[in-house]
Length: 428
Image (cartoon, rainbow, N blue to C red; front, side):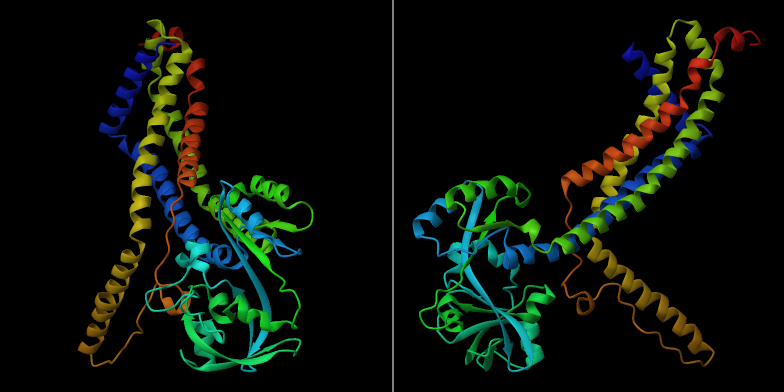
């Protein structure tokens, strides 16, 4: 196979076709690939942002990546051995109880070490520290202190420094605690129904002398590499404890998010199928229109496979150019989605609606449109549209677009083999 010959002729065909009057088919094919890649990149980036804004607080604050439970208190020596594992980034003991706050709200009261930031520095990433507090050695230093979510505080109508009553479901423990901090994670369920106390305060939930039922939360560097870490922790602890991965917590919730992403990628990915048919018919027509040139190339000694690869190269070039443009456009839209929403709202509210209202005022009709808000933190309970572009997914989108272009050009170019130079050139 003469690769330089294929590249020379293929690039020349591609350039000539773009400069000729037949530019529409090539441009439409490239545009279709670019629109598909751009749409999928932007949509999946936004979807990742929304999903991870739910998943990260759950794993970072709630369930951790691995939980160790149903056993006696783990010795400091054993804890040190677990922390020494290469994959482990944090090991935090905690306890949980359900309680009634002020006789109104059911709340999860989690007891944590006051030196939580020392044991798990990454936990601060899930708290909004600009206007709110974090459960740490400062806010939990008093024995009767509690830190609650901002939505719970709003619902109860309390502020920092106020006292609240906490009653366990068993009714065996009831006390007044001082709200020394209010936190916000931007995850509504946690902000509405969680409170943090120190482990010393949490011990009051249980009878005197009763062992505090501790659970140990473990965080690892890569949550998808949890199976190996699980086995290593089991080897350290033996069979006395129950060790579970994050995959077993909120299984239905995580499964629903995964299915949502897969369906979205399939639906938007149908664009590539449509574009693939467009490339197929475009190259098939190109083969028919160039049959004299193909016959001449064959007569001069070019093999059928080489001539076929010329048209496959043309399809691959369409895919490469479309992917390149689509990725650039998708990344630009994804990274500037909040600004784009802001400009769009401005145009609709301050230009379009104002113009229409002005027209109606000219004929003495008073018309007022409501203000349009594409994204509102009050509705979505997040500050901005979150964006998270993941390299493996971007590569997969580009690969699928390239695959569609290749398959379309491969099947379209099969007719090249059936062209016989003698029959075509006989009448020229």
